[in-house]
Length: 461
Image (tube, rainbow, N blue to C red; front, side, top):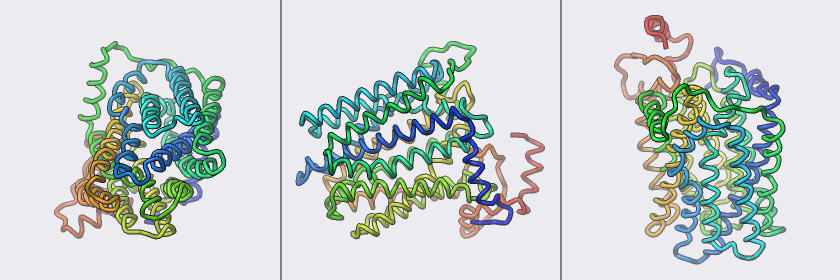
């Protein structure tokens, strides 16, 4: 994918890191990274607690997927409300309240584990309650970033947020395996509770006050939700991003949801292997984040996003056939890269298409589509485990994803990049596939670029 017209790799990476010169963002990034390491540690410990306690049960797969459903289900219920709240309140104060609430729940789960009360049902209930806090936290957490960096640095800030999230995804599960080996599941839960403190300190003392976003009109809750939904649906770019996100997250859910079952029953491993599998996905996501810097600047997101989703389906199908731990880990690194290359550009596009006044609501619709599709996918996969093996559940859902995503790849939406539509003439199927993968008509030296430039002069974006 390299091209002489592309920006050289090193300056691209250096340009991304330059956003750390903004001290509030740097401190926020560090605090969020520590907190997310704790979250991933707890997530791995929760999954293993349920998996190990249901070992030998015919309902093991269902319980494991039910846990994931409980984690993401609150997004279905609260995402749109969370977006409205984010656009109404002082975002810094609201973040402090939510982070404090999540810390209390994490500490409560640790206490229950130390008392020997962390049964599968108790873990699932705490996971659901924590999911409520995270559902409310999602839109405001993302909406606060544009207030910490200049607009021209926003894409770099979003990319670095993906890096810290996936660094946590790499480190958290490995820490969980190590801590569980020494202090048990309760120790992993206690570690998570401690990791909330750095972010809380940063929010309290180092992040400037972020007042309520300006809004000339006072709407009711229902009116503001409708306004956010209308903006997303009438904007071709945000509409396509939401549809693709929903389909992708629903059909890709079992790859992570069934990982502990794969670790135990297919690969014959324990919590150490499970932690390594989660970390492999995190490592792949970090590599994917840096790979974005090597993609030529002309290559548009409306090509990259569906292409990466197709790649994820192919890699996930390969994982379903692997019975060797080493090979499975290498495949999961690839899945993490494809995951990042699909979702990070989606999040960037949504941020850039939103306005300051409706950013929280637009992000909430995106989260509803992405994270709302996830619990439904986990629930459906859990239902399928009563009739199919984990391998065949994965093959069925990711095979469907591989059939659906080429439609979005071949019928692209330039509005994702705020671009005018190109009329390339009649293409054969082979030419259409080649264009979808290479985005050749977007190269600066492409003859098609002349017509696009004139169209922009006639109808500015």
